[in-house]
Length: 382
Image 1 (spheres, one colour):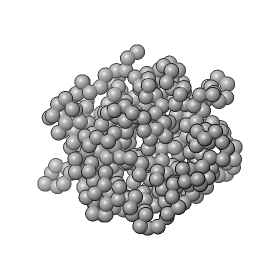
Image 2: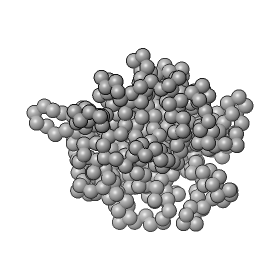
Image 3: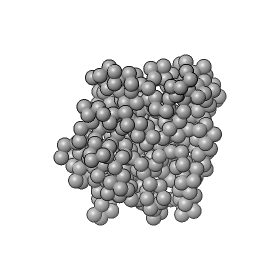
Image 4: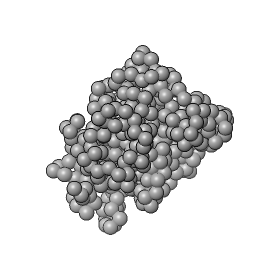
């Protein structure tokens, strides 16, 4: 899955942990300094500030590994392989989502999980998926509803994260969703997004925001922004929402309000940590030493090293990005163990100096912080 780089606008890919502060304004040093103040940070009695974190998990789907379809399309084969030569595992047991829920609960992690409405174009999760029994589908959805949704925002990653669905015929087009998005307008994007929101509502998983598959919408982003806002208003009567498309390597806070209309707002939540879990797919090393070494890339044991620590010192919201498949690690679940270790280190190293929030909670604080900064957000052109 590729994403656009927020300050260079280059496509990239990646699960997002966000240590929240507020929205920074490069044009106004005073506003920038205020934006670094984390929301809910205590300023009474000399207590330390507390930086919120959020975790974004992309590409979630019942019973399948959508990455199998991505590699199969790229390699033009029905036997896709990783760079290591190992076959890509196609099916993901329902037990994995239960294990993910357990890690999130044990470490107090909050954030966002994508749930694909029509995974790989196989069918609607509200009506049944070929290759996934109704019992397994219902169990997967029940675990997400009861154990994950209370602490993680749910979003569609548009519809399939694969080939585009023709909404008139419900057949698959030749173009994938990334390609299709490049020549769309708000008028054509709105019903497509709305369909994803409706399917999630059907299974009891109302979405607070939207996630882009790959860099969906980046070529027509003003149109895409207006479509997200319109679709949420149409389906969920929601006028406050957010989306995930961009990633940045900057230390300064990049998430911001990008659209306001009649009291409503749309926030672009930007990931500022790479998906370090991704590399666990390409190795059979499952040792504790390996797990700790990957965790070090985000946060060392003492809380002083790694990308998350760099952002923490800068008092910048930290967005760590992971994917369903990078936690599954081609069946070895090494990435999930790394996430568990990172969660443990956050608590051990930072304690009450950091706390977990959902992406929507992050967006709310950004919108509140920018409310009086009219130069920070403009309605998308019509």
